[in-house]
Image (cartoon, rainbow, N blue to C red; front, side, top):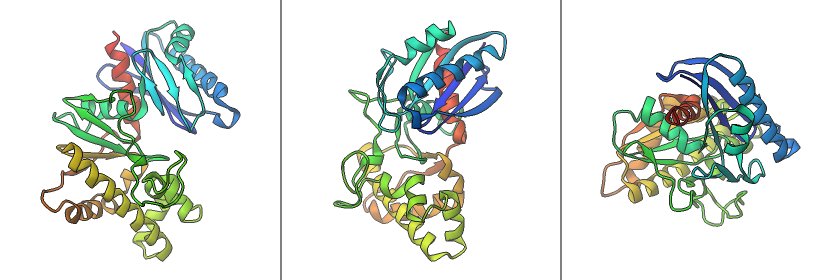
Length: 291
């Protein structure tokens, strides 16, 4: 049965109609309108989900994934610094609007679920899913299930301090990974050049872009080494827009892990198979499980 799958980011949303076997029938993107406040974002989400549900017959459920702190059990979007909302009963609001069962999930953990079921993690085992986008977060997937932690805050690897006393971060700390290695940070450090372009220019010998990209790789390696020593994942699945850099990311990052893990081999680094659609596929899995 067809489900609505909605992946909400800070500035934009991706939506789809997806069949139980993972076949994507339709995809669409829309802005969140976060510049107009959290209430506008909530309306945009509900309108988007309703439009998708009305666009095809036989839609049976919906899955919505959002950033920040999420209480999946109660269906509450508890907090998101990027959007600005607090304690939004989003599952209830969506179910009332759509007249369908709705699942609510955390964007990164649900992306990890998508990779576990339909992507790079479907061979089984425990792995770390790390999408690199506007921000950086991670999901530890244990036996095919993302681990939320005791209070829903697991996976905030973007706020590991990799440069003590370094640049201020939006979280209130200084020197966090996100301020050096996220796509937004890379673009800012390169003077507004998009992160993907920074990677390309660095490979062509642009000194400024090479310096920015080297710092991103170094800080990513610092954080992944710490995560490896703590969690011992079978592999690390890298997703998000920057994972599309391929050979410009995976080999140099793997090389940097070796000297940081002096007494053990690093886990394999693999590219996410679902790419930017991981969150949507994970949302579809959550929705399908309601049926």
